[in-house]
Length: 196
Image 1: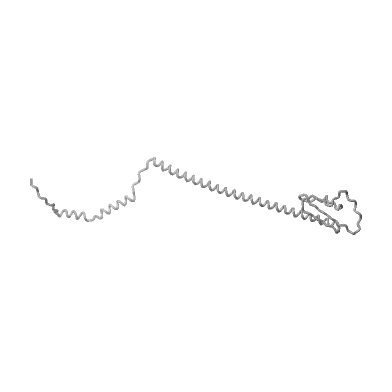
Image 2 (image 1 turned 135 degrees about the vertical axis):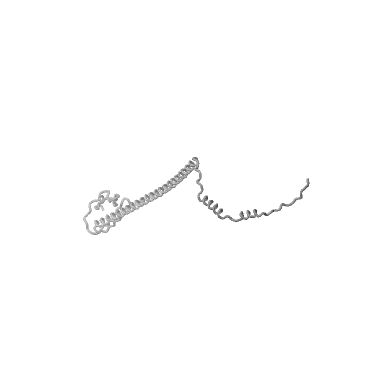
């Protein structure tokens, strides 16, 4: 067999093929616009998703219930915490009020004690004035001590004025006479001015 020499293939440009190529290269706007319009419609209105299986529906409901329960537990926790804080504040206020009431009661008691002491001192001074009046203006000294029991000491010096002789003193006539004072009013019944 004889070998045929290699010859490159020659492209024959026929008029029909050129016409077809020109038709393919020319744009076809109407068809392209129709395709774009159809794609836009499909994108705007997607097909509905298939219905989920019943297991998926149950899991969704369970997750929602769990979320609601977690929120309720959280709300209850914060509510109890706030309620406990409110109770603590109320207890502190109550304790402060009790302390203030006790302090006021103590102050009132102290004021009452001071008033009683002042009244007792006034009564003691009244006793002194009464003794001075009963002495008749003689040269005597009256001393009052604030010790408990109350002690009144009366010292009368002898005067040159003629006076009737005093009755004989009792055998155990003390110079100092002690008078015990009660809590409210002193007892003046034991004070005998004749023994002075």
